Image (cartoon, rainbow, N blue to C red; front, side, top):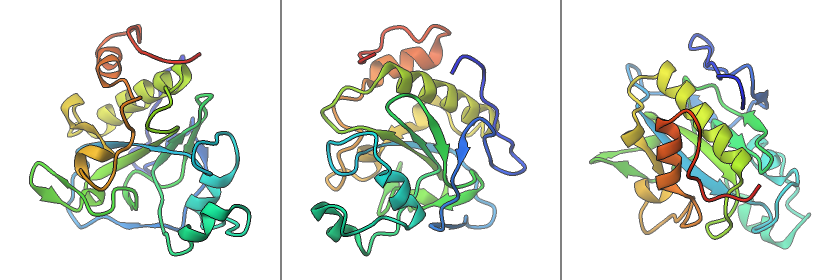
Amino acid sequence: MSTPLQVDVATGLLPAARWRPSPYSDERPPGTDIDLLVVHGISLPPGEFGGPAIEQLFLGALPFDAHPYYAGLRALRVSAHFLIRRDGELLQFVACGRRAWHAGVSRFEGRGACNDFSIGVELEGTDDTIYTAAQYRCLVALSRSLMRAYPGITPERIVGHSDVAPGRKTDPGPAFDWAGFRRALASSTGAGLTTTP
């Protein structure tokens, strides 16, 4: 991401992202301010990267007979606002003004139902696989854009799924370089991240 990203606040869309509208979203509670960004990690099948399954899951089109693991996902209705692929490709599934179904049972600073007031960003990866430089660059650019569009999102209010659902979720996992990400977010260079190319 060499150029700044810009969210269209009127539509909640990011023109630079590939738009793949998910059926798994709804309206936020009236008067809700967006003031939290939740970072997730996902891979489908677990530990495999690059296939279509994540998109299919968020679109309600996952072929459940394509892999033994998928059978357990039949009842799952899940989405995120954004997905960042291993190569840094950015996809959007839910307009920012709408509620994506990403955090589940969750709580932040004593407030439950984090989906109501958060934006969910999925990184293609696993808890113990180092995320790529391209993903961090994209996440930093996306985070800055979201912070401009929704000033309630501050660096301190960018957290992991494990932070809002402790004991239930572990992503983005110990492989995610929080210290390096926060340094990159505060700087203009993106230096200091532990990544693969």
